[in-house]
Image 1 (cartoon, one colour):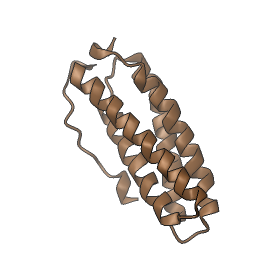
Image 2 (image 1 turned 30 degrees about the vertical axis):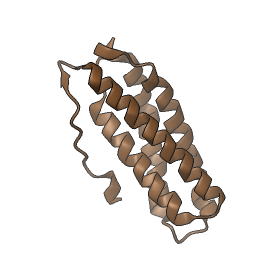
Image 3 (image 1 turned 180 degrees about the vertical axis):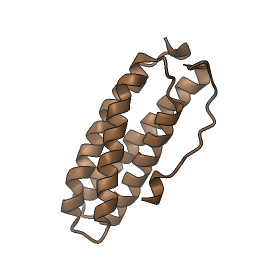
Length: 132
């Protein structure tokens, strides 16, 4: 559960709106989150419990960082929040199961985390510079 610790993100924001670079960084982080989610499920299908745990930890870290960096005034960012929280919740479940369980047991929450990450990314991709 240590992977759910505090992350610091160096994105620049002023008065709740994101600069052009901040939006791009959030979107890049979202794409990395989805890549890890896809890897997580792929490894789950191959029965690699350790890889599921590793990639799910990365998904949770990325979702945490995105939550901290989201511009407060961006509607698309706000719409991504519950999906990011779901991804973290499901990855916490994977962490609780650990890598010693049958990978099939951790695959169900991993698939749910992937679905949440992908849905969050749809909203993150719609974000525009300046939080508009």
